[in-house]
Image (cartoon, rainbow, N blue to C red; front, side):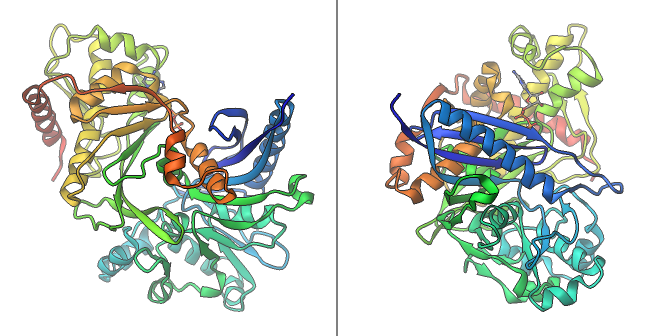
Length: 495
Ligand code: ADP
């Protein structure tokens, strides 16, 4: 059997760790996945055991490397992509974490963020970091650890402790404690990094009271991050790509030109639009972030989220019990007569561009004909219409003309949804051949640094289309539906 080169992608997510070996054409040759426990010590608190993150990563890597080898593919380099913002602090001498990881979803620092906001710091913070004063991001989580673990602050000041997001923790462990580094995309989610200067910021460090001695070096997303220790991983391989999950998906979707958008449809939805060399500030509470940094050159994006996407289908299945499987939604929606029916899935409030945390869900336009199919149609429509609102907010912030919408995530198996998405946004929607775009992006970054790919153009030529959906309704018809939607949304607003 002819031996071929491959790339190992580590995808360390919120509920599971995965390892995928790709061949150099971007085909999946082997995968392994392992879930790990979630810890909820108090309401609103979410923690992971850093050891679980490491062990599940190492296990899945072993399994994927072995399966790939059996298929004649040998990984030559490693890329890491990870759940973002999750915060770990450990002892540099022993490699022991001082506490569990505080996960991005954790709200324990909400009061601290509110106090900083009330003191008028948000404008400066947003200007430098592109983010908002929200407990999601790492800075107030680090401060919480320094304030609540005995002796931690003094040890951090003395340079004895290291901070890292999950990429940095895995890198440290996989290299046997030799590399303390992160990439520009992960650094961009900490609230400590000036995305314009692409450096840690002393004023932000002072504001959050965090010693600089704890911070990792910030490298490009494709860089020499270190070499794995054979005692840890069983093999010696270079780690040459790192990016946060949504950023890796931008790369995996080949969204390299300004105006290209990637949108991931899982439980919720995350959309990023490439804005090129310009870090565009948002007036609609979207986030400005480093999409990726290659050869020292940052490319920026605007990022927005929808809280309820696939979750609307889960709601029909699990709470109402009117469908048995998410996949039934496609056939049902296709048969529905749902003109004028709108589901506003404001189950946890409304995000961009409405920003009403107190709004709650509603359904408008019920008739005697409204049945299961119509509910499903309205639920899928709400995913498309919320995407439209997000794109509208992006358009208001940035003059960048919007190009194609490249989609991934569990929902994109649904062809009806993607056609409707094209119809209701007026943009062509593209589904790739490989929908594991996050892992693929990490593999592309590592392959770029390793010399497997020469350039982003070379990576782009790898990206393969599975299906393209063109808008097929008139502008007037679209505007009519969107008007009805906005009317429905307005009726749920509390302010
Ligand atoms: P996550 O990563 O957030 O767990 P996934 O990317 O695995 O989510 O996608 C799962 C979501 O997609 C679920 O909310 C499910 O209801 C929805 N989903 C899965 N298949 C379909 C389908 N064929 N049509 C519509 N929604 C679907």
